[in-house]
Length: 83
Image: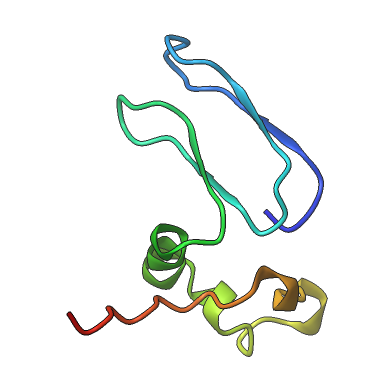
């Protein structure tokens, strides 16, 4: 989410609703799971890189549909540290 607020409620109503207000955050509801928010993190970036190609590269979008994601920081999946 880049701005504003959304109220997200699981379909089955067994889990609580949440209000997502975090800029550059991501809210997910896995099947049968609870609502969770992913702020800037490796987990968020993995989902962005897997499922949201236009966040990674907006060149294919008409200019009216492009958004400034600079304030979201690095959206690349961080490499694993040598261990």
